[in-house]
Amino acid sequence: MTRVAHRFLAAFLTAAGLAAAADEPPLSSRVVGGDSVYVIWPGDFLSGIGARFGVDYRLLARQNGIADENRIHAGRQLRIHNPHIVPAGMDDGILINIPQRMLFLFRRGEPVAAYPVGLGRPDWPTPAGEFRIVAQETHKSWVVPKSIQEEMRRERKIVRQEVAAGPDNPLGAHWLGLSLWGYGIHGTTAPASVYGFRSHGCIRMHPDDVADLYDKVEIGTRGRLVYRPLLLALAGDGRILLEAHPDIYARALTPRAWRTPWPRPMAWTKPSTGRWPKPWPPPRRGSPWKSGASRSRA
Image (tube, rainbow, N blue to C red; front, top):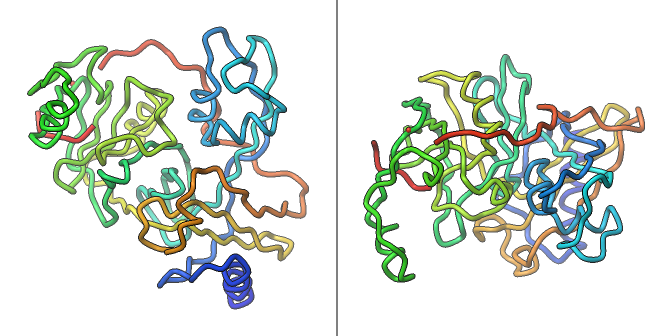
């Protein structure tokens, strides 16, 4: 069946006029997310809701028949459809798939948590590779790297060498330093930027999510950043699921079509149960929080 799934992928790419990546994606058997309902709160924006659930706000608007993405009303119910294939190949630790903008935590080969993340801009890409958590800090000061100071200068912003812990600190309240020097997993003062490519290379999380992850890991926890725009999964009834994302860093697929603004359609077929697993962690409202010196990219 694995061979059939990869033949399906090759046929899909050929039909789309695309060249396959050098490495075929490992076949998965797990999907997280699914269908849920969210009630809009006063002050909500569609971009922030989409970032919280790991779904592009434009797709969210289309799914809910919203003509103007900037006009939503408190009390309205939104249908959230956010299935994600869990990438295969991890036993214990953290797995982050860059094009998918998702972080998965594994224990004994099983995913125990999944979170949307924000990653580096195309001109400040998040690197792929193995890592370990080497630091855990709360309310960390941000020592601004020289390269980001130069960017501040070019953009005629106030050039800051260090930002103390507090509401203006872009690292948020929790910091997980990685063995990839200068990179870390942290919170953010801009939750709507999660599930996008807006950082200088670090991995951003919603403040509630990073607090949850912080309590689940420890120094020495291993992790891996992978770059898989295409994901395959085999459902229990034998159906093949495909999740496709733009090749945001132009590393795996060459045609320009894969770098056009997303969201692009995803080919999904439901498992035999007729429904997706319930999303986890459970959706939560944002809560008030505070923001704690190595040089790091925000």
